[in-house]
Amino acid sequence: MTDDSHLTDADATDTPTATAGDADGTDPATDGGTTVGAADGVDDGVANDPVVGGTDGVDADEAVGEPVLELSDVIKRFGSETAVSGMDLTVREGELVTLLGPSGCGKTTTLRMIAGLEAPTEGTIAVAGDVVAGEGSVTPPEERDVGLVFQEFALFPHLTVAENIAFGLDDPDSAAAERRVADLLELVGLADYGDRSPADLSGGQRQRVALARSLAPEPDVLLLDEPFSNLDVSLRVRMREEVKRILDEAGVTAVSVTHDQEEALSISDRVAVVNEGKVEQMGDPGEVFEHPTSRFVASFLGQASFLPARVGEDGIETAVGSYDRELLKGLGDGYVGSHVDVLVRPDDLRATPVGDGDADGEVIRRQYTGPSFVYHVKLHDGTVLRCLHNHTEEFEVGESVAVTLVADHALAWYPAQ
Image (cartoon, rainbow, N blue to C red; front, side):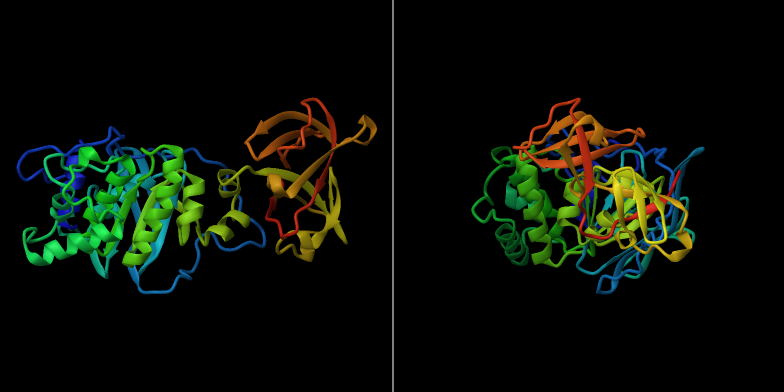
């Protein structure tokens, strides 16, 4: 790990695993975020039924470039509790991979093992081809070429912005370091802020300084632990796009951890959905969202509803009508007569007010999002579906509606439960 990141790790956490402190004993300023400390627990999750006709749970590393980070069957136990239960992950040169999952799924513990703040119980971790954990040895954090940006940024209050960025360099007072700092200030859009104190900066500016400091020693891998969680919503959206731009321009290989689905889907080259300590599905954000390979992934991403259907010779029969079998991705002839659950999201469905005799169900809740309404419709058989409508289309709770499946793309499906 780079000197800067090693010091940031140690000072930004209160855990005994962080092995280095501030060189002069002065604690860095923080923004009051949650420190990375106790290990993740194991989330109970949802039944992991494989999608029929979908892609494999973990992709075949379709991204171009050489592997920079490789985790192979990594397991982490804390006493009788298993936090990570067989993590396999490959991150290739220049890509941003996000570990996405609920609290307690093992994603932060995985990040800490990559950084060297925790040692795996079993398995191996390799950075740039060198095994840094496993095979009977563990490389200390300060000897790994890994940078780490925590959510609370952890800038040193007694140093200027430029001095903070230069802190992790071998010779921070050299002309080469001065040029490197100037280049990074330009990269993060703070060219005129080098002489400022961190206390004079906004939250977004402090985040960019923390990012520049971690980039200064040119690490093989940059780790970002929920880097936007301390920012307000509007700034969070702007900053995640800015950070993605910075990483792309710098050509950095990065791994991010978040539970924010929109964040993961919008900036990642690939997303790894983590459940109960292992990667359940990994791939392009669009593929993972549109064709989740398990009920857990489907339920975790977006607002998912499951529409029961019976597969016939020529189509599928549902409580809201009959539809062409081609609507279901990869449905083979062997499933004629079978019952399946079709994944439908709010934009796949439309509700229409009708008389009681023509209704499929009734509106039991309406969720106002500003630009739109999401109507929760309970069908006569008890199934609840969510239907997306423009904010000008107002239905009342209790109103009788017919529901139409309007999806114009192939839908994922699962064996009926």
